[in-house]
Image 1: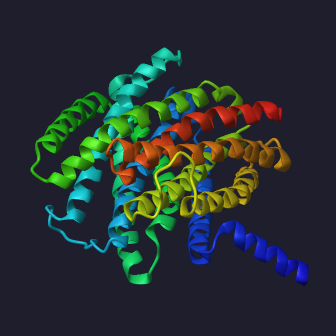
Image 2: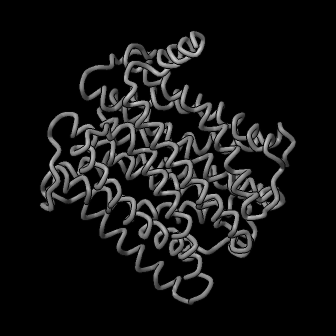
Length: 410
């Protein structure tokens, strides 16, 4: 009994003094894990569609990341607003809340178009045979992105409202739950977009209309008199553009290994789960660091210390059991749908090895990204989550493939 109490005490010191925040994060991460596993099962069940529409898998990590990039940043800004006592839900577009929602909605549409444009180019550069056309990429990306964004936006607003009523810390729950919902709805939404492409002749009409609307939205956001919205858009646009490019390169890396993934379909279950949970951990750390910067609790120096180090230690401690569960859950999920798996131990080893590399990237980019945002006068709530997620997608794709090769799974 004494040893057990000592172990619990050591775990408490590792996770930090704010046990309530740890519990909130852990619960949100477990909900996110279940949702991303369901997303992985959806992906594994779509083998035929992936083969029928070359380039579709290229969009998956980027489309999932885009929900987190746009709405994770929205949740982070709203969380800071709550901590600073300036949060108030209002239907008026000129309020802080209204301008944040308008900015996130417009950015989601324009970012989905940008995603399709870059995907079209990268599909050719990486030599993906018979890849979708520009209008097909645009249709799949925007139809899927808009459908998913409606759901994720509603959840983000509901979380903000709930945090003020029930005392949740939005920094602890937004990133995992946005990731969970984004994963759960984005893949089915992309499949809906792919059905439009495969089953109808509307892709050219939808694609050209979507491109025109994106141009109008971009011009309107730049010329608006709503100062908060304009600042969010101008600060977010280059970050989201870079983030989308890096996430698409990650998707291209995965797409080029499609044959190996189809040979072991359990790996298709693992892909969104692994990326989703790594992004959720990065979002928690970025959100907490952003809030502490605004409150003046974190000194801006080369190496983290004090409250920042406590947050980093907490996220690292949470990562190990989470990635073990990612591997175990992916194997069990594949077994449930009667699809091939390299085995329980192999899947756990792949997830854990890849996760170790991912968490190093999460900590480095979240901290130095926050420093860079402050240095260049950008709101860290707007920049840190997209930057962390995009670099993580790229590095995570390589660490995932490396882990698969090292374990001999494929």
